[in-house]
Length: 158
Image (cartoon, helix red, strand yellow):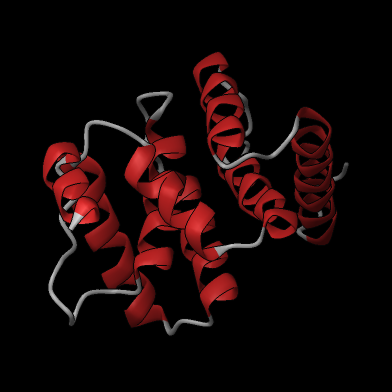
């Protein structure tokens, strides 16, 4: 009952039973928030989000598109990060939460540059899901290494 009251107050009432898994929805909403922080949600960021969600939740391309659409709607309806970060805290073990931060770094760097607002958002989300500064920095390094490896694979150089 308390959870329903919190959902009502935060404007995050759970969607119908046919909706995407709430954890996947929460992660997708945070990834979208990171992409939108620099006021330019571009194709590279969208492709990165879709790739990350497909890999993390083992989704088909159609399921990923549906999840992203639902997450965009949920993110627009919500005025805060709390419902999304709380779902992550409830469903992901503390040791595994740095992977979410790494995913967020990949989205933040997908357009080739880190905006100060993106950096601030990732610091905030890391705090909300209890990922310490050391793990946040290590997640950033892993994300940058992945991006550099992808550039080399595409023949763009390091």
